[in-house]
Image 1 (cartoon, rainbow, N blue to C red):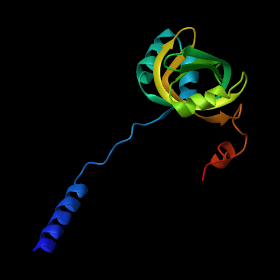
Image 2 (tube, rainbow, N blue to C red; image 1 turned 90 degrees about the horizontal axis):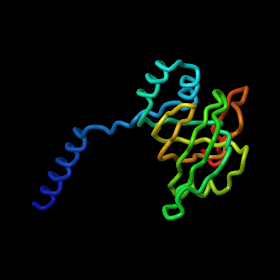
Image 3 (tube, rainbow, N blue to C red; image 1 turned 90 degrees about the vertical axis):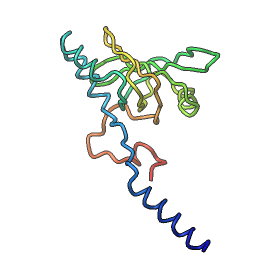
Amino acid sequence: MKTMIALCACAIVGLGLEFMPEGIAEPVRNGNELALAWSTNNAAGKQVVQKQALGIFHTFRYLRVTAVKQDQPVTGAVTVMTIESSSDMKVALVITKQLSLELAATLTTNDSVAAYGRIKSMTAPDLVVVDPALLKHKDRAAPKLTKELLHEVDPTAH
């Protein structure tokens, strides 16, 4: 009898999992293309780009570091000021997570990084604030001319 109850319970749980809705991940958009679209648009076009980008995850590559600022000693937040290479747009990355803070501590001027996070604001003259942001890895300064493989960018990738 106990075996029968256990089998029925497993069957009910199994059926419940089958009908459970699948998780839907939020799409991550290309921040480099966003910066280029912002910098090449007029005022009306910038408003449209800004409306579509605020609060959305974006991934940035080839960001050249210009400064690393300790924002709040109490919380430990750090702002990494960068320049996006294709548009010369300033991108401020507000870092709060421990692994990203460790990477930010090793950065110097003219290093390049890859990062992602939510766009908090886009203001003139050409400044994007990404808050919260996560640093992925140190990056190369520009795209490779041939096909780029993940393990060439991140040696720990499988």
